[in-house]
Length: 195
Image 1 (spheres, rainbow, N blue to C red):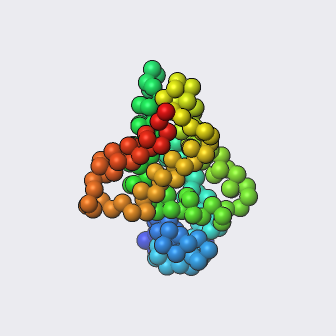
Image 2: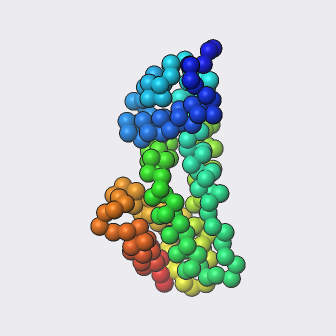
Image 3: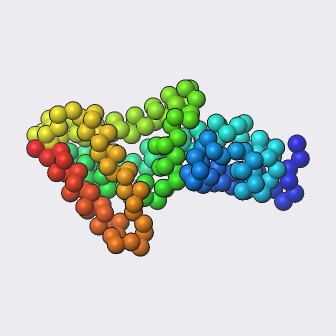
């Protein structure tokens, strides 16, 4: 299949991903067609298949890329630091990382239902790897007597949901700076698990 004049794979491929990301976040995966993505990129619909096998693969690729970046960006657990310090580092990292990626976060949480069972299992594994880091911190805090948590798995999911919620309302240039948001959320997280 001939490529559209002026199209370059190293330029068009990322544009296809960016257009799909924006359209999926704005309208939802089910409401977006490959034709809409092609129109947004400025290529013929058939040309999209030079960059992705289908819409499902595109959704999976966007989610997997986001979660791979998240897992790679996690700061290492500092040896010798207590659970409270590690929990603070996790809290601040989560807010800062996700605040820069609102569309990716929306898709990663809201479009799971549209993944095929095989793709869902892979994405769920990546999500679990991230959640396990927080649960490990909470377990350590309970063991050292810093935290009082009845169920570390439920606490993990609650803390992540609370932190990810920042993306629904935070806007740069708003009433609070990101540093202030981090400080306030850290205080809420700390109080929610403190012994």
